[in-house]
Amino acid sequence: MIFLALFSTVAFASPAATLPRGDDRFQLGWSMTQVDSALAANGIEVVSRGFDFITAAGTPGAEYVEYRFAITPDWPSRLWRVTTVYPAPYKRQDFDGVRGTLEGLLGEPNDVRPPKGGDLEERVSWVDALTSVQLGARWTEPQDPKVDRMVVTWVDRKLQKAVETQRKKPKRHGR
Image (cartoon, rainbow, N blue to C red; front, side, top):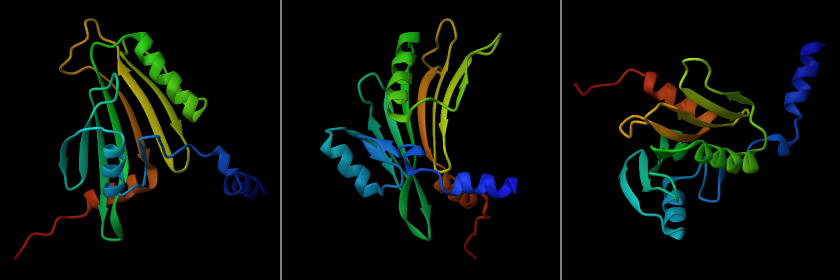
């Protein structure tokens, strides 16, 4: 009986309860061509690219944005992860500004992990069955531009599983 109640809550949840799949610059699940078109339409420079990624110049305040694509035999490559990287030094107000923007788009976070004691990392997460979004930062004094970054990561959870499965498969070598 409890299982049925839980199942019906999850199975019939309102579509409005799901997280957005991106913002005005991308949507998780897009093809590489769609991401290229959106970058060009927004005047964003592509810095580098490979068969499964595009790295673009950062938006205001960001150092760069990396778009990662899942390559599987079942469908063309699809956007599974977007990482926006903000360089050090960043301040509390920078973190709070990015968090406020994300809360405006995603609502209240599911999990907030402020730094405690000797912990230098802070994380704020939004998660549903299809999407996960995480904001993280390290609070070291002084901040080291070589290792300290504030990062926002969007993940398509279904495509992430496909990527992880693909990575675990043994590699075939020519005979």
